[in-house]
Amino acid sequence: MDLGAVTEQEFVRRQKLEELRARGIDPYPARCERTHTAKQAKAAFERGELGPEDEVALVGRMVTRRIMGKASFAHIEDGSGRIQIYIRRDVVGDETYNWFFKKMLDLGDIIGVKGPIFRTRTGEITCEVREISILAKTLHPLPDKWHGLTDVETRYRHRYVDLMVNPEVREIFIKRAKLVRALRDYLDSEGFLEVETPILQPIYGGAAARPFVTYHNELDQELYLRISFELYLKRLIVGGYERVYEIGRDFRNEGVSFKHNPEFTQLEFYEAYTDYEGVMRRAEEMISYAVKQVTGSYTLVYQGHEIDVSPPWERVPLRDIIKEKTGIDIMAHRDAESLRRAIQDIGGNPNPTAGWGKLVDGLLSSYVEETLIQPTFLIDYPVDISPLAKRSPVWPDIAERFEGFMGGMEICNAFSELNDPLDQLDRFLEQRQAREAGDEEAHPIDEDFILALRFGLPPTGGFGMGIDRLTMIVTDKPSIREVILFPHLRTKGQVSHLDELIALRNGEPPRT
Image: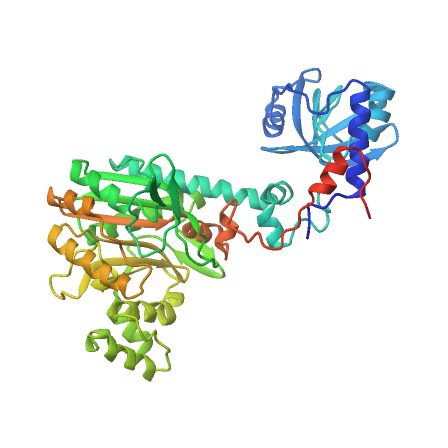
């Protein structure tokens, strides 16, 4: 669907625009009067606060119209909802009714009305129009009211139209805002300090991902859009704050899928004097609190599955669940070649150059993740894919790290933070070797972060969660694009209609 093309209807509306101006009516006035939203007006009437002669001033987009000779009904819609209006020729006058309302106005126009509120014989609360004005003349007609706007790419590319004609889409983002507010309320109430860290960073870090690269002309310096807040937030723990968090955008130069968008919203918190077990308890408490605040319940339905988010969540060692799903005991295959052969033996096709940790992660992605519907913490991950996490005191190749899963996908990642500066340096050097061997997601060495650790990072637990994925589950949406207002889309193949628009501006009919 190509919404950008100029149609004959737009040309007709363009002519109406000029006719309004010729009559001295500004189709886009600078100001308007409003005393109530649609919702407020209806509520005030229900409470008996508006008498027969108490006028209200309402504004909104005209979304329906039913003309019946000398009187007509219509609905206008604002951000709070819809309200019916009733306009009569003998009240507003012949010119206002027959010329302005019936001829000059179109569905989609944003208008203002003034008059008293009453209830019709059918019981609908309605505004009787005594004055009517244009607030914004729309040139492009609304999508067909029966078929709406259903083409997925068109909905994402022109989200403003999607929001306009699909009220259920507006509700998604209201829920998203409530979810973020609830997460923030929880952390604030627990003594966490909300902070802001740099988006443009001289050295990116905190995750295994490729960055977006940009350039600062004045500083003559290459910079990166952050892929995580982690290293800066841990610097703040070094500085003396004990509980900090940030909610903001991260950027990863990676593929696009139903659960990946290059720009996404992340929540990260760091807490001194705790470990990954303490973070697990806080995570399940925080997420269940937020879900309850938004939905009113600890249970929700995601893609046909009923999910119970109430604590405690199940805790399962990564080793155990991989063995359960594949028959492979990763700790019995402690080197990459041995594990690679075991994967091939069950019909897998492992990466021939991947290290042990990435092979383990591949088993998780291929055989385990989509089976984890109920909230589950998988614990104890390979150190070589956890370069910022503290080692297990039992297994030196295993890190005290967990990932949280729900609805068949990962929603959070956390660990006991590595605070040994020399071990951290060794991990960075190993990551550099991996990068030199071709791993584009390997972590770069951040010398200033090592310096911060040399000043002493207390025992700390850290946590990161994608807000978008949690929103998918709370709103029962199968794609991350449904819960991001303006998801990234390819521009290839987009058609320009600039020449048509210029012609429309000049009052020329569209060329067929």
